[in-house]
Image (cartoon, rainbow, N blue to C red; front, side, top):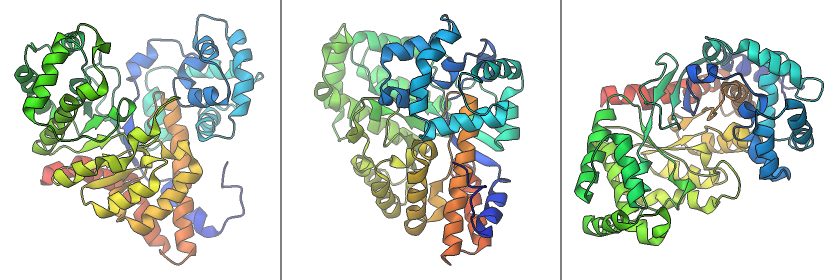
Length: 435
């Protein structure tokens, strides 16, 4: 849905015009590096169905077998499109599909993906897939100053990134999620360190956080995909006993979550402590998990309150507006000085709820505590489509506040700059320098 063609007051157009000129600090991306993108000929479905839209396709009725068929570049595109088409038509109303359609139209000049356009779209994607594509889409089209990168490919050194486009965060979840001796050996190989004891593991963790601390802008965790976000307090002795059990397990399925919990919770507390020591903010996935058949209650942000209370010196950036727990997040951010709201992903999960949530947060939470945009994409075209939706959403909410007499136009534009750039700059790039 576009708002330019609607009969909206001039206030919206003035604010939208100003917002369209703001250079964004993008607080969250998963993009592969451009050189990886260029290694392969672009495949329409490998790229656009790498995530998000694929979840809606499954939700609409597509089977996993059909999804794998559509994603397989070895199969002729004509056969794959026939399977894709009916499900794609079912999800045209969603934010995920909307972001893709915007990108396809604005970047490649194609009005929608259908049987008459998809081959032309593929041709134009191949033509654009050359050095400079990231700068074209991220810098020129999206007006993104820099993106904070959470690289999911653990084979890629987090420092081996284009510093003009990205600033890295790093995950240490691998220390938390070990379940067997095999997992420990995998950890040893990844960090090139020997781990024969619980003491060794703690030493490696401390060393790796310290080595990374001046090269990253934060620590990220995605543990809500695997377990509840309630991290209780356990003693070092309790954690060590569990570690010994893990070390004796040959296969990952050896221990259940409740058996592992004293170890996992202790290690996560340790990671937060190390973040505080290094003055690094902690990014936490809360709310909706990508994919299907997840346990949403694992990611309720209220589960984290004991951490916010215990580690007052640590800044916590809570992701995705905690959707659908936007009200809970509002109360938490209002209550705790060290908790911030991040709208990454939210504008495409539900563009409507993103507006409702932002309107509430601007009534309840200090404006410096809200980060207005993070693309959260694996493919660069999605980032652009997301920026278009986000800028419209923010303009609409702020213009409504002006129309209600809450803000002046100048104040609304000032807040837009805070949401899209200034807050993230202060939090991630200026704060540590002034600490």
